[in-house]
Image 1 (cartoon, rainbow, N blue to C red):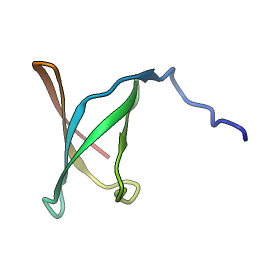
Image 2 (image 1 turned 120 degrees about the vertical axis):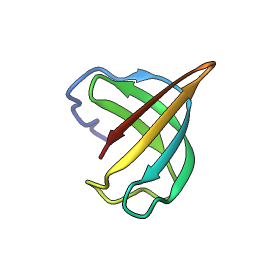
Image 3 (image 1 turned 180 degrees about the vertical axis):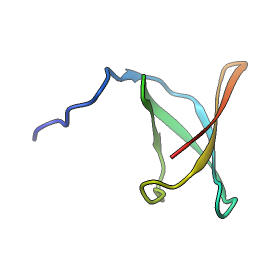
Length: 70
């Protein structure tokens, strides 16, 4: 099995995520598993289609970050 090449180093990072599909306003609560300069991996049983516009809120300990993305 060959691992894919990533644009930036990934770091293990586990935090709570609120993910909102901006088109349908559907919200799910998930977990991150890693973080890099270009984004994070959100483990979800029902992945959104590539390119879906989302609002993400990542919460870890007493801090949180909100951003828009795809």
